[in-house]
Image 1 (cartoon, protein in one colour):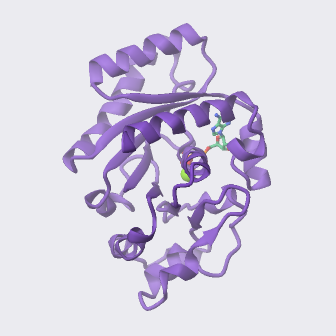
Image 2: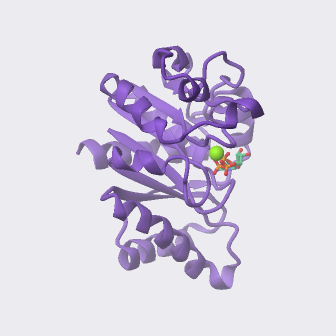
Length: 247
Ligand SMILES: Nc1ncnc2c1ncn2[C@@H]1O[C@H](COP(=O)(O)OP(=O)(O)OP(=O)(O)O)[C@@H](O)[C@H]1O
Ligand SMILES: [Mg+2]
């Protein structure tokens, strides 16, 4: 079962969400693989202290004869299997994102859940993988919208990304991230999204300064600081995600 994580704008929290929801599912004994599909600016490796490894998704895309297993690393603290990307310029040039599909086809039978972290906006790098995925998670940072146009901006962003997932018949869910607004404002926004756009909001994650700290430590916050508000919110969102996928 593959899930693709997307956002409309850069820095909304795709990679953080990928890392944390993977960790929550791994803690429930699923075999979880998190793949960096952001081929141009990969950074999933940082979230798991795997930013300086020999084999990456880029090595595999360059040389199809390599065994994909070589680029899969088990992250000790969370138990998530990670296929990081390479941030070296010469690795990023001249690779074909189309091959990402073959790569996933070759490893998918070994995992219960595969998360694919995507580039921002229309995710050109991972679009081919929409053909084999079942789910799309749209991460929206709501703090950035000016308050008067808040709802419209958020709905617009979700609508555009939803259209892509629908074209591939994916089940679509939303995660709101970096929330600083009062809870009642968020609850109202969630109601509007669910009613007007007809997509479930799987959860909302508060803005929490421990998130960047956990990335620096290379351990997703659900494991790094499990009692923080953001960790508890990711955990709850992971529970809902599990229910959504596996019923
Ligand atoms: N809930 C949160 N609270 C505080 N900071 C957060 C939260 N979620 C993410 N961040 C911070 O925001 C930054 C961007 O997060 P992240 O890299 O996950 O976003 P992204 O959507 O993957 O970005 P990109 O477009 O660069 O791929 C990071 O520095 C991270 O520490
Ligand atoms: Mg990212």
